[in-house]
Image (cartoon, rainbow, N blue to C red; front, side, top):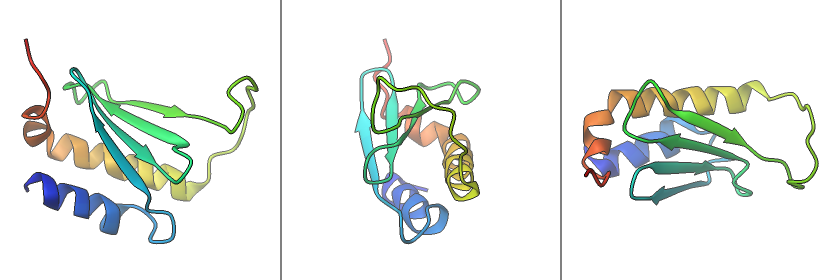
Length: 98
């Protein structure tokens, strides 16, 4: 799978069709997958498939709340993490290695 196919797979096969906003940022040491229109969820891949990180934000970063996570979001996050693991070799080619 090439990168274009990878992104299409995430947008149209993993994410909910009504909430499939996706931004991908490339940094020197990681790739960030930002989900939903408010970037509520960020999945970070740093080249180690056993160290994929998930960050969740609310509207007010100064307020820490315990909120339930809907099953649809859990499915989206898990699906993207699986896609990252399955395509890690291709994604690694985008990471700047020393």
